[in-house]
Image 1 (cartoon, rainbow, N blue to C red):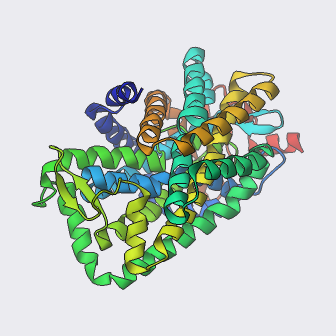
Image 2: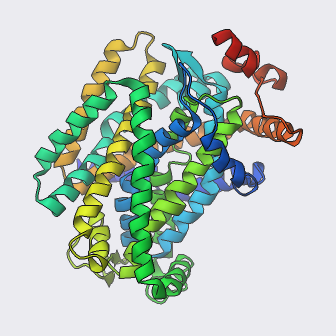
Length: 482
C-alpha cells in the first residue's frame, strides 16, 4: 500500500510539477501587476468589512473558514518536514510560494465569487462550479468534485487527526484511540450544525489560536534575538546553495519548500475558493483580495513562527540526498511536531510539549471543520437532492478522521500528498484557462475605486457569461433577495 502511494506521489509531485506551480503563481502575479503588493492595504482592510446574510457569511467569517483549512498541521508538522528534507533553505521557498501564491489565490477565489450560486438557501461555489460555468466542460467539473471529495473526506483528514493524536500522546501520554474518539465526537457536534455553525466556531477559534501561537514564537525569538542575523543568513544561503553544509540539497530545498508551502497556504489547490464563494460581498474582487491576504497570514506569519522557533534553537534534523545526516539536533526524532515541541522546551522547560500539542489540536481540528465544509460543497454540486449524500459524507469523514488518528504519520502524510496533488493538477489547469474573468473583475474593481466608489459588480455589463448571480448587478440582486 505504502509503495503504491509513494509511487503515485512521485508522479503527482515530480520536479516539473514543482516548477509549474511556481511558474503559474509568477504568471498570475505579473498579470495582476503584483496586486499582492499594490493592494496590500485593501487585502487587510476588506477582511473586516461586509456583514453576513441569510445566504452568506461575512468576509471575516469566510476568511476564518479559509484559514481554518490553511492553518493546520502544515504550519507545525509541515514546516518541520520541509526543514528536515530540504534544510533551512526550504523556509525561503515557502515564503516565495506564499508571495507569488497570493496572486493565484486571488484568481481562484475571485472566480469562485463570480460563478457562485445559491443552493438550498446558501451560497455555494468553488472549482467545480467555475469549471462548469466558465469553461463549459461538465465532466471536468465532476472530476474535480470527485477528487475534492476523495481528498477532503478520505485522504487528508488523517494527517490532521494523526498530528493531534501523536501530539497528545507525546505530551500527555493519552492513547491515540482515546484522542481519536474525542476528535470525532467534537467534530460531529459542529458539522451536523451546518455552515453557519462552522463559520461561527472558526471566526473565534482561528484568531485565538494563531495569535497565541505567534506570541509564544515571539517570546522564543526575543530570548534568542542575538541569533536572528545568523538564522536569516542561513535561510537565504541555504536556499541558493551557498551554505557549505546545506548547499548540496538546493533541489530538495526548492521541492520541499514549494510542496509544503502549497500544502500549508493552499494557493492554487482549489480549497480556498469554496470558502470565498460563501461570502456576502458586493464585488468578487473584494473576497479575492481577502483570500490573497489569507496566504500571507498562513505562511509569512504562522509558518515563519514555527520555522524561527526550530532554527533559533537548532532543534531539527536534516537528511542529505545520500541519506546521511547533514544536521542532527534531535537524534531519533521523526520530522514533525516533535521538532517544535523540543524547540519550545529548550526555552520554556516543561511547557513545550503541552503547548504544541494544544496548538496542534486547535490548528488541526479547525482544518477538519474546513475539510468538511469543502467536501459538503462538492456534494451539493454533484447531487440535486443532497440530504442522504450529506449524511453519508459526515460518517465517511468521521471514520477517516479516526483511522488517521491511529495510523502511522508516514502513511498519513503520503495519502494527504496524493489528495493534494490531484486537486492541484485539476485546479491549476482550470484557472489557467479561466483567468480572464478574474482579471476583468480586478480591472473593474480598480476603475471603481479610482472614481471613489465602493465597487459593485455587474457581470452583464462586463460581458461575463453564466455568472447568473451577478447578471443584474449586486444592488438589484440584493433588492430582489430582500
